[in-house]
Length: 245
Image 1 (spheres, rainbow, N blue to C red):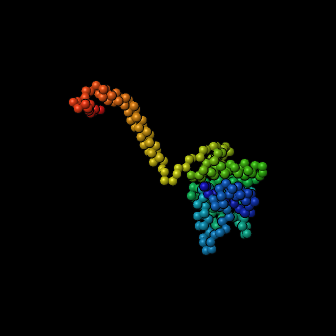
Image 2: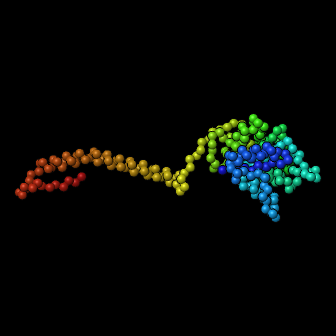
């Protein structure tokens, strides 16, 4: 099952991100969707903790609202310019590990330009984005995202209606059949050999049956012929012949 990390700013998109989280949890399960990393143990470097959490995921969704780029801290400094900003740490960790990063634009939010981002985040500007719009478009938009994540996830069941997720969520849905699961301890190569051996054995049995079918009447005729034509010996017993076939 694919593991999804939701990166967002609470002051920018908490409500919509909550709805996005609910839909993702319905599809992938609570254990496979990561949002609000509040359980950082005491005394642990939160930068390393966030980096490790992002590294364990298959895709990072960056929820970008209208205030995401300009968000400021208590001192009036832009949050993205702070090396300790949670969002910055999460996006940097995914980009450095080649984890697919999907910008999710809300409302009238736009993709940030490279020069508007710290150098370590500028690659984000070149990732194709998708939109999550208000109702009635919210659910179709989420279906497109979920289908794309499922296709991107490794060795996951592939339901019908898959989208592509190579850094973005396309508008077209594609259907991909599920792959049959082999029983444990039954490699595909071994099963193929077993089928071949069974086929050879069946052919051999059919061949022997055909041979017996052909020669059996001839053997019976020869035995009956010798039984009738051979004279009896002086004791009145018929002579016995051994037929070599």
